[in-house]
Length: 363
Image (tube, rainbow, N blue to C red):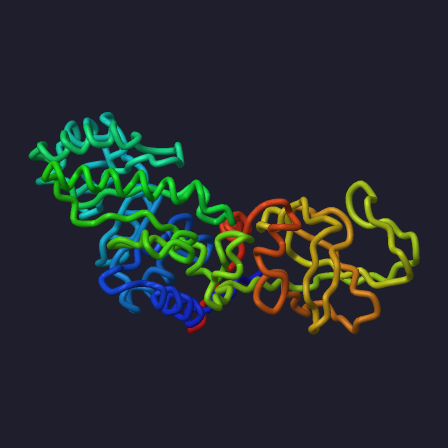
């Protein structure tokens, strides 16, 4: 069976490396959305909380409630606005809500949530995804500040290009956000926590760390973009994926392999079929592009990726059914390397690992 090995000691190692980049008083909010980027929400959250992380970020109400249900005591911030009947349950579970527009504020007012709802207000400084630009965000902040049903605990924004070499756009975002913060201060609107930095911002823009940073991909061992590879402080991938060889076949030169016969043996060779396919999270685009390691040797993918299987050209290696292939990880191709070959990014490679791939944790 395919297995994703998650090394929690490496996770803590990455956390400590990131902490060395922070000034005094700046805390880490760990992004554990999307199943902790495919690594498993609760084992990751528990390991991080045991290492002193007291803030967690999620994308959906279900993710927030999972953390609370399974015993996470730290602050939980829901990154997107919540609507509908679930708001009261979130407030009762002490989840911090995001307000991004008037409608998200009105949803809290109508929810019947007990007591005051704790909120962070999102300002759009250039991402264009959630929140009003600073002028509109200021008007919303005034309304939130005067509302007895909500408590404005924080304000935040999100960088769109902090992972790129050209710093112009991000520096303009920082300037816009700091102007917004200054205006709030002049108007006497108190929001104790400001935050802007994702992994890229944490590594490349230390002046914008404020009270909180929100690393995601860096915790799991990857720089947030190719342009920032030189900025990462020795991060190590946390996940290693292995899968078994299930079938071996000696083929002659010219023999076609897999759908469409897009690959033909360039010489007499051995084809190893591996129990891992695109339904497990290995992109179909890696057909004839990807590679893996087997007995310490690099072996290429032969032919198109199938739903449940892929084939490798293992040449004359001595291989037996049941031998395990490293498909992803520090001793094989990394998620960044495979992502580049698949014309995507490490984030998508990690979060696409299917639930049918067993997670096994070591520490």
